[in-house]
Amino acid sequence: PGAQLPFDPEKKTLVVLGSGWGATSLLTTLDTTDYNVVVISPKNFFLFTPLLPSVAVGTLNPRSIIQPTRYITRHKARAVSVIEAEASDVDPINKTVSFIDNSEIKGATSSTTIKYDYLVYAVGAEVQTFNIPGVKEHAVFMKELADAERMQREFMDCLETAAFPGQSPEEIDRLLHMVVVGGGPTGVELSGELHDFLEDDLKSWYPELAGRIKISLVEAMPSVLPMFSKQLIQYTESTFKESKIDILTKTMVKEVKEKAVVLQMPDKSIVEVPCGMVVWAAGNKNRQITQDLISKLPAEQTNRRGIDVDDHLRMKGAEGIFAIGDCTATSYAPTAQVASQQGAYLARVLQQLAKKDALAANLQTLEAEKVEEVGEEAQQRKNKLEREIKLAQSQIAKVNPRPFQYSHQGSLAYIGSDRAIADLPFMNGNVATAGVATYLFWRSAYLSTLFSLRNRTLVATDWLKVKLFGRDVSRE
Ligand code: FAD
Ligand code: NAD
Image 1 (cartoon, rainbow, N blue to C red):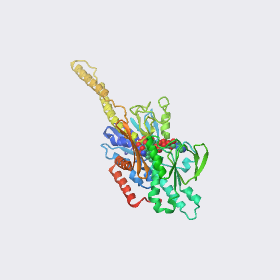
Image 2 (cartoon, rainbow, N blue to C red):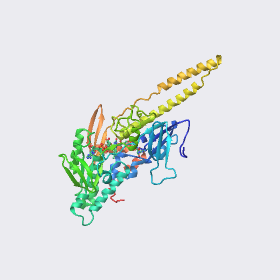
Image 3 (cartoon, protein in one colour):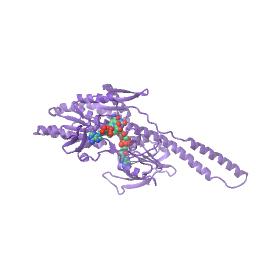
Image 4 (cartoon, rainbow, N blue to C red):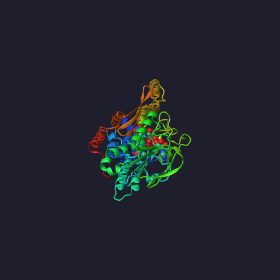
């Protein structure tokens, strides 16, 4: 209940949790005429994560890579309720979701519980800190829009503080040492973007400091970007070498301090390295609400990595719950590509389910009409009904959604210096490409993947602005 919910008791209620890649792709494809659709997410927008590192260095305006969820739902055939709230509990037995308004301004009502018939669980994941001391307190994450904005502020603060009169050379070197933790695609792309900022802008804005900036990328494993092919890893390593980005592999961050990072080196020695900023891009883990949901179904949900789903993306052991994207534990990588394909698949499945549910309701009405009277007329009606029931049953049996199948479109990453790397599937094989042409491909691929013309225009305009005027170095 509630004033804004377009509720029709004849229709089933579909609750969607999240407004990220999975949920947005689902909403884009979904035929909303079939359901009472309710979307619940603490963010009332979709964030285009691949371009987040570009926001962190001021290449893109934060607003250019987000899209309000209502932009998608307002064009839908039947109204959709979009609620800015955080789901706090899912009860898979009673089929309810509880949610709270956790924004700064709260009304007299700020928490409630609603029932669902179907639930699409797409809450993503959160940053994994491995409980390493100091990470939460001193490192900057690179997951949400606010993280990128915070990083830009801190980075600029380091520069301005280094430029403060009388700063000692050691202190300048500390402030200008940027440490990126995690050699996955997030850490690599961010290091590349930081380097570009340095090359393109800092040399002219802060000529006295530019030469002293140092970027270190720390990775615990023997190599960065394990998901890319060997030659692309080598290409990235040599590009970083030219760009003077230090890659420290087999090196593990043990602690983050206010002014330093503690590293365990390949020879197991412990070194404390002074630095101005630490960016934490060391991977993700389940959200608390996901862990709670998993623990409610101990017999069926045994995977600690995330929600266990069957090949139709149904949460095992929970009737009516589908789970997609980073919150699931599947054989697929936790990527936007996977989440968006799952969302689109699920939209089609839900359409089929609505059809099946309508046929089942019809069957129920027919069965309820079965007559017990005697006589020729009654017998004829009974025969007709039985034929209709058989037809309805066979129609129901025919509605059988196919299992989800992922189609990999390739892996793409920007590594700075106008260069990108790409592993693209080609004729049952793989083509690895790298360089400036790949970078142009990266740009056009991302531009065309942005969901709306509005965002495409904003991003293209930002790129043009940077080309013409450079990045904005003012600190908010
Ligand atoms: P998300 O997109 O994270 O969405 C989760 C949604 O749930 C959010 O809207 C969130 O606000 C909401 N939510 C959170 N808690 C709750 C709650 N309690 N109740 C309700 N809603 C909740 N992948 C690629 O394939 N290619 C790339 O180039 C790429 N680049 C990336 C760059 C960066 C910097 C990052 C961080 C990730 C990148 N990824 C990329 C990975 C990709 O972003 C994720 O795999 C993808 O976002 C997963 O989609 P999702 O829908 O599962 O989760
Ligand atoms: P990730 O999990 O891929 O990489 C994190 C890295 O941090 C790992 O290599 C890990 O060994 C390292 N690490 C963890 N703890 C450490 C420590 N204490 N010290 C040093 N190193 C440590 O995380 P990600 O890069 O954020 O990527 C997350 C997902 O998003 C992946 O599936 C990725 O493919 C996807 N993604 C894709 C792109 C792209 O395609 N361009 C870009 C960003 C993210």
